[in-house]
Length: 141
Image (cartoon, rainbow, N blue to C red; front, side, top):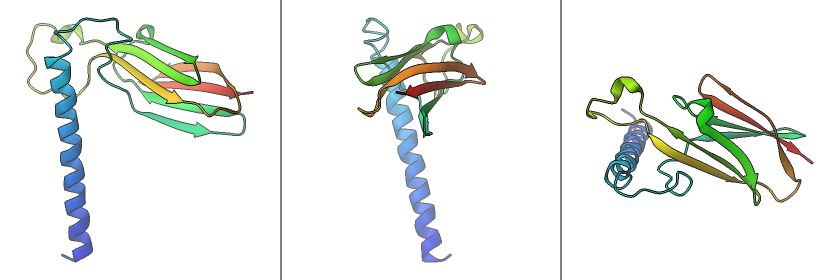
């Protein structure tokens, strides 16, 4: 095996271990801390969904992966120069009685904040939810 291929393999394995450690830490905090301290959903955020942002001449499109989240549990707003996406992912009813064996999908309240550029100004345009993907249109003014 060439040295370059070996380096890529080692870096890929290291990256996978870091991602696994982050999932374990996030899940530990959800279990250990989240159940003991009660607060409002906006103040007790356990996880942040991933996003992609695409800019066109007149629009910023924000795509957020939220599989398993009911559309009624999602809120998007612009506040103090930030796009704020909040909501909650609940455990499906089929799993209410069991114990967790493996926990990689974050549950509970979430919040994602994206600092918007100072100019131009943005307003919320069309927002839709399809196949677990939240699509938010931010119109430039």
